[in-house]
Length: 139
Length: 139
Length: 139
Length: 139
Image 1 (tube, rainbow over the protein chains, first blue to last red):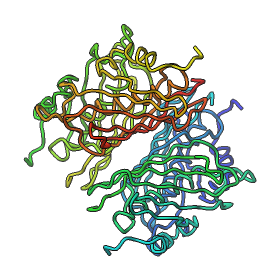
Image 2 (cartoon, chains in turn green, blue, brown, cyan):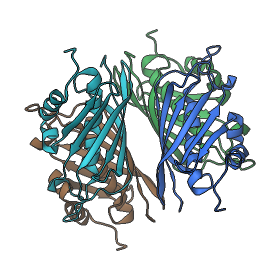
Image 3 (cartoon, each protein chain N blue to C red):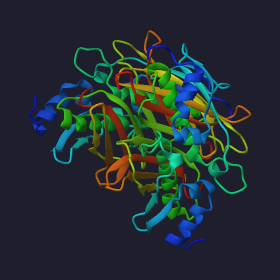
Image 4 (tube, rainbow over the protein chains, first blue to last red):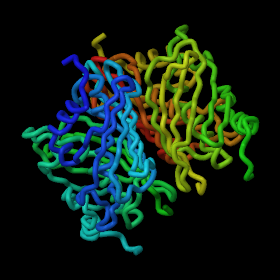
């Protein structure tokens, strides 16, 4: 598969995964020149930190970061790749909001790739940032 | 609340969170001397990476690391604390298995605490390791 | 000291540290609105990875990242602060070049701050990226 | 070179690097079964954080972590390997002391390896911990 993945194809690949489907991760845009992928993910009752607060638990935010970074690398290698490691920094609570992840490939090497992921709320406020290492094009 | 949390009290606090409850995170042991907490988490269909593989998606593994590290700090501060950041390293695929997280406080300071989290499968094999920074006792 | 630090004052504080002085870390610019600091650091024979290659060892690159992140936080808090943790990702070898670090505060909280640090070579190529957590304004 | 590296051979390889030599990194022990390497590094005036305090700057501590992790991987692959990324957590100030790094390979894969590094002072107190990803045996 040497063709570049369209947003629709990317969405298909993402939704094949039961976890990603449960997360309702939705492709908003793909940019092959910038190697940038934008995804959204709505709140679910199962993702609440405390009952009736509308606050996201940090766990699904981290999962969203991993997922978004992985498929940003897929812009380069045309398939999901194993995550090697990633870091999550929480900046602000996310309350009563969907989340948007903007994932950008910083470096796509043969062995590994590095991706930065910014997670924002409905007001465009940064709620968390991620940085991940993924298997590269030869992986 | 200056008394140390028992395993039952810890379980109560954990299960109050809708996300933790959804994860069915279960306290196996608490050790106040070693500041070590052991939790388990069963597989759910929603956590699968690919359909019918029984393989854990990395996202819920990372969420489990965050959750376990957080409540290890709670051994020290008697309440859940905000996660500041954490790193997840994936070592091996986890297939058709429950997960066990052993979370140990490496350093509990006033401003922040550092916790190491090892995640193993049913055979005791290490599938992922985490290291997190959490708000400290004055946080 | 409530006044904002000028580039000259920042340089003075940096150079008071024997390690920073040995590194010849030099302030290129300070931007209080963007909370961004730019520093340079020349190659030294002691920083070579292998003899007569002109290649930077990763160790001093990581040290430069830590140093730059720390003083970016100083734009906010007017003094150097303890580093809590940081991550270094190496992207390309740095050969026969000085290094430039652009450090930008992503979030400056009371407890902790998060800083991103990009390290480039003489051609503007990214050789490493860092992300650090530093003690905040109340630290 | 398929033979396992002795402590003397490891020392020779380490000291070939001008930076490592400047750091006076000294092999204390190698353990091929545990894939564990112990190194020491004395204080130098150039590594002081503030003049006449005897306190280590964080930069050379991070560099020591990187170096120790790298050569722990060399126990497995018989040669120094590129560092992909690493995390440094500072736990306590290190004052008027040499440093000892105990680096242990957590997972040695073909693509990457993961190494944990504990840094202690002369009293055996933990001053920092590191976790790094290095190129693996096929790297």
